[in-house]
Structure formats: C-alpha cells, structure tokens
Length: 181
Length: 181
DNA sequence: ACTGCCATGTAACTAGTTACATGATTGG
DNA sequence: CCAATCATGTAACTAGTTACATGGCAGT
Image (cartoon, rainbow over all chains, first blue to last red; front, top):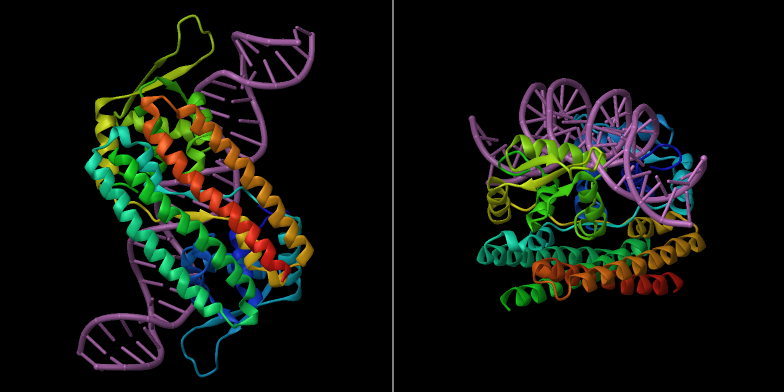
C-alpha cells in the first residue's frame, strides 16, 4: 500500500491510462488481460470499476460519457496531471513489495511424496503445455510493440518476463526428468 | 478453490504437515517463510491459525496440547489419513489455477515512460540486489535438502524455482542495459 | 430471431492483512 | 532484569472474487 492509501493494483489501473488514450472500464479489463497479467495480474472487471471510482474521487482521473451516438452507456476515463504526478511519485518513492510467484505446479510437486507419481507427472506435463501457450501469447505481445516508440517500455518488460517463463519451461522439463530417476 | 471448498492455501498448510512431523502454528509460519514463499506465498500467522481450525473441523488433522512441562500454551497439529487422502486427491484431480507472477519491478518498468529514468534505474538495481538475495536463500534451502530422502521433492522444486529466479536476475541486467540505449 | 460480444455495475461473499492483547521462556 | 523470541489468537479491516442484473448492438 502506497503512502496515499492506494493499492498497487490501483496504480496498475491508473498506469494503463498513462499511455494517453481514453479508455473504458471494459477496455481496461481487456488490456489488463493481454498485458498486466504476465507480470502483475488481471483484476476482475468489478474490481476495475471500483478502483476507477476511487481514483476519480482522488482527482487522478476524469471521466465522461463515451462517443455521442453510442447509446451504450459507455464511460471513458482519462488520466489527469495529478494522476501522472502520482504515478511518477509512486514508481520512484514507494517501497516495492516483494516479488511473488504463485506456481501451482511447483506447489504440487513439492508435495510429490504425498501423490501418485503418474498423476504428478501428468500435472507437470499439463503445466508444460500451459507455459508454452503463455510464451506464444507473450511473443504476440512483443510483436505488437515492435516499431512503436510509445511501447518501448512494455516491449522491454515483455522480453524480460519472456525470459522468466522460458526458464520455467526448461526447468519443468528438468523436473520431469528428475521425477523419473 | 478445490471441490471440497478449501483454498489452495489451505492445502499448502495441510501439505506442510504431510512431511510427518507434528507442528505448531508457529512452526508452520516459520517453515512457510523459509520454503512455501518461493513458489507459493507465505500466509500471515493469523491466517494459518484460521486454516488450521478449518482443516481440523473437516477432520484432515488433529491437534493436541504440546510437550507436557511446556507451560506455553503450545498446540501441535498432525495430519490424519483423511487429510493425506485429501492432499493426494487435490494434487491429482483439482484443476490448478494459472501461474501468477507479481513482479513489482517489472510493473514499474512497464510504466517507464511515466517516470524519471534515473529513478527507474534505481528501482531495477534494487530489484537486482533483492533477487540475488533470494537466490542465496534458495541455495541454502537446496543445501539443506541434500542427502535427505524425505526432502527429495522439495529439492527438485527448489532447483526449479532457482532456475526461474536466476533467469529473472539475468533479464534484469538486460533490461537495465536496454534502458541505457 | 438468435447468438455473441459490448458495457457497467451491485451484492454477497471469501481471502488475506495488520494491529493488537496476552503471557511464557531464554539468553546475555 | 531486559530484550528477543516463542506462541496463540481476536478484531477490524482491505483486497479481490463470483454471480448476477441489465440492456444495447452487430452479424448471420
């Protein structure tokens, strides 16, 4: 929790708006699913709407009804100068919480002595498939940032987390081999 | 959430008791800090006590007052056969939730365009130090499991997550270089 | 006409946290 | 004797979730 009482997730949502476009809660959820989730996590839609209300109350963003003519009750949000300042301040001066890896396949393997070996192997093999899927998604993300100067930092981060998940894929293979010994 | 309504964290706590020793809530917290946290996360003490009560109500563990002569109101827990069966069932037949990486340094870097470059570099350099500390702790853990047959699976998992954090350390360096371009 | 996506939110819940109260024991 | 650690838990809170209600719009 930052000095101003906002959670890291609130800053993640606010951060999505620092890229300059006006976005709706729905847009934010989609973008979070496609990016944030690889190195933070993607909050539920209802959670996003709540954070938006909180951020607006603090003056970090403003909202207006969407495109005229769009009868859907769309509402779009834009970051304010105060919001941009808060993000800069948060990045520089808020003690970052520790890195956290929630790795269900590793947790299950850790308890391998309490499980059937064949079923444990199946868990790891499924995990291997999952991680590879994740890597492909990240590769798509990286391709989408290429050549776009505004996406320089997201590109750097996607390469970063790609290396992490690639190491997981390799280490999963190694663990599978060791299970067979 | 598993079929029987227990959270993954409940199974993590129960899992700590599959290694056979009787443990107190306090012991569990310490052990979680020293192991679980590298691939799952370490619940607060109060959370552990709550999960213990829940698990005992389900008959997955039993408790008794600690060593006679120990006037401290210590209570130790042991897993039951039903508990062991539940763990085996959970490992094999519960859909694992997706892997989750909460990486505050990467999140901040993702928003690099909204921050002062020098301060962002400082965030990454601090992260590099943190990860190296983590790697040393994992190495201690690995050393502690070596030669102990009961710790075979924990050993496999520690090597596994070691590879992941080592990749993070390397990728952090790469990101720092790219920031300088 | 129907299906699927767009879009926002509320209600009710579970998960997990911090702060605190309480008291014993151990080591210097 | 004092500080640190051992040890358990309650209370009050925040974080985050799922389930659901509501309705528009677009393509087939």
